[in-house]
Image (cartoon, rainbow, N blue to C red; front, side, top):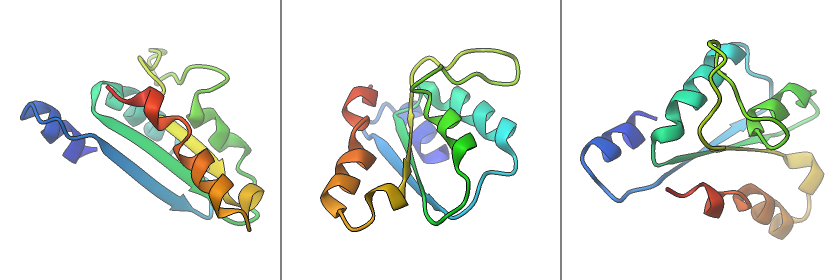
Length: 110
């Protein structure tokens, strides 16, 4: 996220896509939500891919598709910068996986 903040401060036209692969849930969930809401002004998209059989139900909240993400102060995210994808849903179909992983990026560009 710092790289995206630096790019914005320099007036760069860079856009950063952060890909996170995880086999578990986030333990500091509220801090993560706070950081994502704060990052909404940055040229940044965050893609999280859940791998394995973990219960990723809570991770869907980060996606912000059903309800806007809110930080610990109750402030709403200005835009949805996060996409969460369950790898097992597309396992064996790399074209569909790629499509789902990148599906929201065009709408997230600043």
